[in-house]
Structures are given as structure tokens and as C-alpha cells.
Image 1 (cartoon, rainbow, N blue to C red):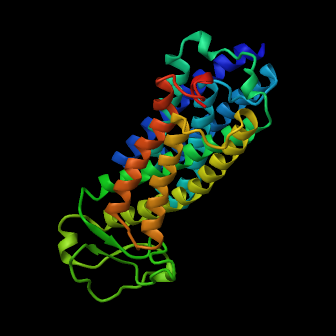
Image 2: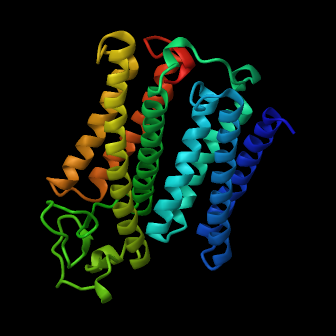
Length: 329
């Protein structure tokens, strides 16, 4: 079996596994008394991750360069990153709802790459002169990892908005708050209402505790605990993705100076990368220094999800600018 045929098998297997995995997560959320579905979902994401890693490795051996030179390769690298960050987030949260929102993202990306792109766009080709640089691996891989990480963090924030049903829930303890300390009382209540006496979770865990009767009438304790977990994990994942985005932009500026003689050219891709950086910088600033938690930062993160997709794919649909070659860089 040659490497090209192997790649065709692996991309279809990745899509099929992710599709089944997505269904398992969705059914698992609907029927939480079936624990084997959670194990199956995690296993499916791990298998898909390995399949995509093997696909990219085969591509690397076939072409002789790091597989990030066209849209097909970048989509599978992005999907691989999403599944990898998913496994991290799921291990941190112990909630199958994480997979219910991340699996569709990974599956959709692989479906677009394997089923929608024409055959000529799926074939490897010699690198254009601008991409024949060691910076290809450094800049593009870090940028793609940052996109994947920020996407996962953002969809978890969107899941938080869904779980809380638009209620203005005030959290304490799910992020660093003012940056000085983590509130050990872990208050969880509706914004604007007086909290009851502090309740301390057993063993000092970060489980949210419902403290008002008013909230109990709208959201169950289980849903509130899940909301607290999603808020916490979303914040931590975005906190991981933001430094990656920063490093990727800096590496791109250095590469641009070597290739074009300028660190910054206000190219559409560069402009949207800056917009993406500013959106998530505002998110982290609001959480760390302003103590924002719950609905407001989640809305900002949801906006970030859209901005990341515009930066990654939307700008390239225009086919303009210094990054127009390769259709995605």
C-alpha cells in the first residue's frame, strides 16, 4: 500500500470515527445513566487523533516537508489539535458535555477536508518559494495549535451559555478573579442577589455550590455545578491558547521580515490575527484584572470563536494579500 492510498483511508476513517464519536457523546448527554458511552466517546476521540497524526506523518514522508502547505493539510492539523485539546479538557472536567460540543467541531473540519475539497486540492505539491523556510514549521504549526486551543475554549464558553439558559449567574472560584487569590467559598448565585452564608465544599474541591433559592427555581444544582466547570475549563484552555497565538504572531513577524523585508504589512491575515489577539487579550484582561466570570466573558469568548474562523479561513476566501498563496496561511 502506497502512502497516497494510506492517506485516503486515514482521512475517511478519521471522519467516520469522529461522526460515531459525536453521536455517542450526544446520546451520552441525553442518557447520562449509560456510562459506557462516555468511555466510548473518549476512546473514539483518541483513535481519531491517532489516525490524523498517522495521516500527517504519511504526508510528511511522501512530500518531504512538514504537512502544512495547503488547506487540506492545515484542516487535518487543526482537527488533530482540536481532538488533542479535547482530551486535555475532558480529563480536567470529567464531563461528557465537553465532547458533545468539541466532537462536532472536529468532525465538521474533517468532513470539509475529506469530503468537500476537490481532489487536486488534497494532493501534495512542491512548496512555493516563500514557504521553503524553517519558519514554516515554527510559525504555522504554532498558529494552528493556537487556533485549535482557542476554538475548544470558545465552544466550552458557548456550552456554558447554553447550560445556564441565559441566566446572569455569578461565579466565585472558577477563575483567579482579581488575580490575588482564589475565593475559597466558591459562591454561585444569580447576579444582583444577596448570597447566603458561605458553604465550603468537602475536601476543598472547586465544585460550585448553589446558595440561593431563587437560582434553584431555574437551574438545578447539577446544572450549576456543570456551568461552573465549563466556565473554569474554558478559561484555562483559552489561557493556554493565548500564549501560543502570541508566539505564533511573533514568529510570523520574524519570518515576514526575512521573506518580505518588513515585520508587519497590515496584510488582511495579519490584521485579523491582531484582531483575534485583541479579542482574547480582552477576555483574559476582563477575567484576571476585572474579575469577570460567567456570562459576560463567555459572550466575549463566543465572539472569539467567530473571529478565529474569520482569521483562519474567511480572510483566505477573498484570495487577497501576501498570504493568499496556499489559500490558508
